[in-house]
Length: 421
Image 1 (cartoon, rainbow, N blue to C red):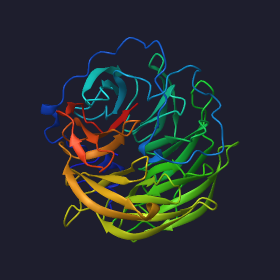
Image 2 (cartoon, rainbow, N blue to C red):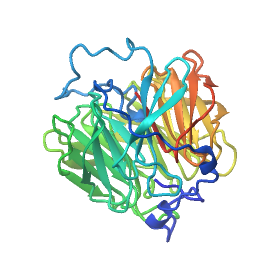
Image 3 (tube, one colour):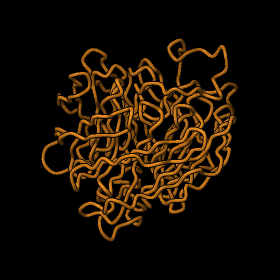
Image 4 (cartoon, helix red, strand yellow):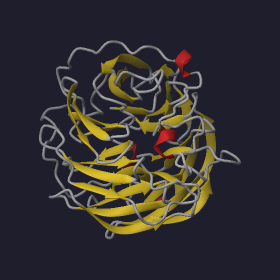
């Protein structure tokens, strides 16, 4: 969402208006104009994980109806520059003109801007279809929508309304048939069907979180994330406003939602982002408001999530507004982005995923790291820094999990999402 001068959102009286106020804090000096759109690509982008939270999740028992073309080289077999997509806000001063296009060197991490996909309003979060052919973006506006883009020629395939306000997150079900989106402003989640071409149909489900009541200092529900559980049959919605993670059963043929459980964290925690351990039995929850993380137990059979005790982010007193947490594909390390502290916290994952041990924090090299993502091979970590208008890249040591900055930050207007393929 559009974080303002005061990072906390949703306090009484703020509502959606606060989400419309973005203070660049010097970003204009750091940003450069994105070049004109590039010529259409002759082949689809390679397949990759659409959202960082799904890294390492076990594959659900559903086949992709539109598999990647036969003979397409695997990610590990490809060499040379790799695609990078950048989310931004188009309706704020100093913002971008659409979805930023770039490439990165998988060895050095160096980023090179290549263009813009225009015609997509406020694409603040991005996700890739499992077959790698279609990119999806939220349109984070009062009248929320989601947009599909065909990557073979960067053609915008159209948008569909979410039925809510201010969508700030979306993900594609691993089966490739359903798009899940979360509306922060209205506290609702939606499901849209995806056809064989990647185009979106009219939504099949819309649920607004009405219970429990908003947490301390909140004016209502604020859905912040909507992702698929490791079993594939359950989808989980993280709501900052109600201090709750909701689990729904997704009907894989109809795209409808049935609530099966609620996991409530301590009042005022403000849960923002959830990621699963590759073993599928544990998940890690970043709490934005009280500056903590929690290890959660997940039951794939029922979809029930049970949060554990709150743990430190290693950023000292007060709050640093944790934004996102990732876990490596081997389940050995977890990383947390801290916006107020401008750092990345590194944890060792122990006891088969049941425990996080705080190791250290590393300066992110930018201001207000809103989103972090791994490259498909896990060797690089990208951080989109909203207020400095930059993307920083780190080498990830596979043995120790240590982070090493990879060169100078890349200037990108109001960078709020970085999706490397």
